[in-house]
Image (cartoon, rainbow, N blue to C red; front, side, top):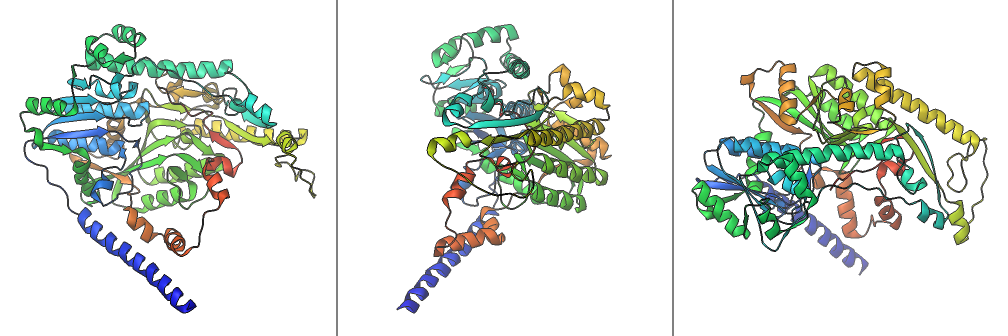
Length: 580
């Protein structure tokens, strides 16, 4: 009986694996077909998901593929191709709660503006629009929304949450050692409100982004900045009020908005083409080996030591392997390094910089910063190559922090005790149930200060400046790239096109070279990833037969940011900034 049950179970397992393999083969074949663009059509670009830098894994099943996130480079290249495609007669932008930072919003807005230069009409239809949605849409020829919606345009706000009072009630004390008076990463746990330094830094960032938004909306709607500021003070707006204020041009449903664009473009309303389908042509263009290939090398997420699986993170071992592969790949003529990272582990940041410096010796490199390239994210940018940033990019934060909790008070409250033995005077330097001793604090201070000195020195070397020039810009302060005081940290304000032009010149590629940017490393098909990674497959199959059951501890760890779990000194942004 046992053998029969075991055989039946194995049969189910192998049948399941066979179905997966067969399904993979079928969808792989289906994914190789590129949809043809109907003649006399208009493109519909829906910005309703998170906008990211790293290409999402391809899911070669039509409905699922439509749900994958856009990347900045995909949007840019789709609009570039559509602008010169004689079959595409217009563009409809539809917002719907998509997530992006201000730098990404600036790049997308520039891509739409470039499309407009083709002379083709651009309309925007807003759903649940916020300030960033409207900032992007303002460049359109015509903006509309449904008359029951709200235009959430009311200025900008930034705030921090402070947990000290809560931790006091729990009996938890956070001990922070940091270098740089602006490096206030631990303030959320040790204070109850902003310090003057935090107010100064955040205030400058808020002012910078506010100015970017006002200028962009004023240019798009052909109004003065003073008018837009006045309108912001009167927001948010019910749809009818937005129409009366001439912030939108019509109140209508989405089918009516498409009819208006179709009429303007002189095409049928049934000729709408999803930009998500259209982008398949871009992906297949990336797969081609012809032309002057430039690697669009993305570094996105928290910087963490080690390797393995970790979407949304820069795992040092994986990243360094990609750098080495790119260095040896002769098909790539140059590298556009795209950074969107608040930093993370100090040691990993240093390893990444060293690897990128070696890459820079082998191939022309230019750095393009996205929403955030701060702390460790800025550290890896100072390879000595030109650095480009958007006016709304948050950068700098040149500082180091170490933090750890003292849970003695909490343990006393819940009756938990610990007892132990040690050999070595400082063997208990990192235990969580006693405060730091003076000796321990001194040692940590030495380490943090040494790491900070290295940070400032590496920045000075990479920026070809004296330490005395960089020190006033350091101290852990986060800067907005458009701040005149931060000018020494970057070389030029501009997006991907400006960085690419500089890179072409650096690589001695003429205007007729027709370079082709290709995301690197390329995104894998989801099923390819499963079948191509032994660890993933072992977990998939193991889960089918009852092994590899996730433990509660694993679920808890997933709730914590990986760099924090690793411990050690951090080159990390003191806070995550979302201005909205």
